[in-house]
Image (cartoon, rainbow, N blue to C red):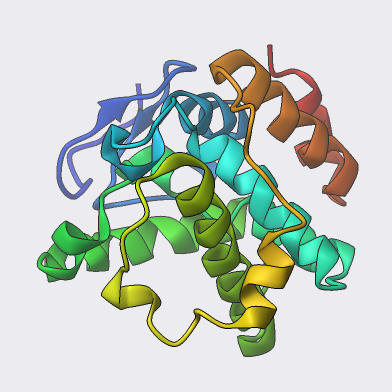
Length: 205
């Protein structure tokens, strides 16, 4: 076993049996199987939704919205993986994340390792497009899965255009972990340009 005495922080074991150090992330230790498997098993909104709804299904929804907004294949690929770091950090709810700057710093490091592993390079315009799709997805999810209250973080987005776009999408019926994993896997195989990523995605089971 390689010397691990110089690694920062502690590690946890991933689904494939790898060790991953959240405070010392390395692109070589990111695995598409771990990412898709983990995201399909994690429930959005800390579980406070009407039905189980995975981060993997959310990721597929965001990619679909980017496609609707005329995003190119590269942007759609990045959108599909926009929450991939959560396979290693968990899907922490926003109020907690805002109060934990150390967590956010760690998360940024994991995001960078994930983007390097998946050969994702984003411009400011790419990130803005994916952020817009992410917010639109939240409108769809809020409508379909949550009790409708007004969220301060969404003020400014409640426009006819937003609701018009959201009307084209639904997350119902929600997918169980296996079906969500398969849906994300299929999109990865279609969108990935790197042969190694496609081969690895095809091996997910």
